[in-house]
Image (cartoon, helix red, strand yellow):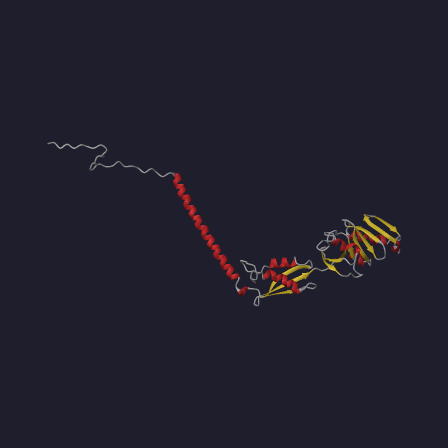
Length: 294
C-alpha cells in the first residue's frame, strides 16, 4: 500500500536546512533625528546649569544672610554731632529708624561693615529743611559706634511776606527758604517779593541771588543804609534806602556797573547833599538815569 499524505492548505512549508534568509539592511537614521537628539542633550545640559546656578545663589544668599546678621557686626550706638537749632535726639531717632529697621532684610541694615550711608543721609536731609549736609561715619570700630555729623543751613538773609515782619523766614546762599524766624532785627535788610507760593521750601531769586547779595554788600561798604529790597518782577528790583528814597536796578546789569553809575550820580554837583529830597532814582536804562524829587 502506498502512503499518501495530503498537504493541508495554509500550512507553511518547513524551513529548508542550510538555506540562508535574505539580509535586510537597516535604513540610515535621518539628519533630523540626529538634530533632535543633539537639541535634547543640550537642553538637559542647560537645565543642569540653571539648577546649579540656582543652588549656588541660594547658598551664597544664605551665607550672606547669616554673616551679615552676626551680632559681632551689629551697630551698638548712634551719636549725633554738629546740630545747633535742631534736637540731637530727634535726628538720632530718624537715623535709628533706618539703621535698626526691624523689617526683614537679606543684608542686615545695622551691619557696621555694610552701613547704608546713602539711605541714612537721604532720610535725615529729607527730615528738615534746616539741614544742609549729613556725613555718616564709623566713630569706633571696636565699640561699633556710628557718628552722624549734621551741618545746618546758614542764614544769608531774611525774606518777609509783603513786608510783614511777623511772617518772615531765613534763606541760605542758594536762595532756599528753610526756616521761619520769630523776630527781625532793625539792622537786618528785609527782602520781599519773588515768591508766590508757600515760602518754606521755595527759592528766592534762584540764579540771581548772588548778584543781588553782591550789590547789597557793595552798597553797605559805601555806607548806604538799606532798609528793604523788593523784587518787582523777573528783572527789576527796588532798593529802599533808610534816608527815604528808592533806587530801581535791573538784574540784567552787573553789580559793578550799577555801583559805578550810583557813584557817578551821587558824586555829581546836582546830587551832593540832595538825597533827602529824592523820591526815587532809576538806574535800569543804561547810561540814562531818571529821578524824581519829593
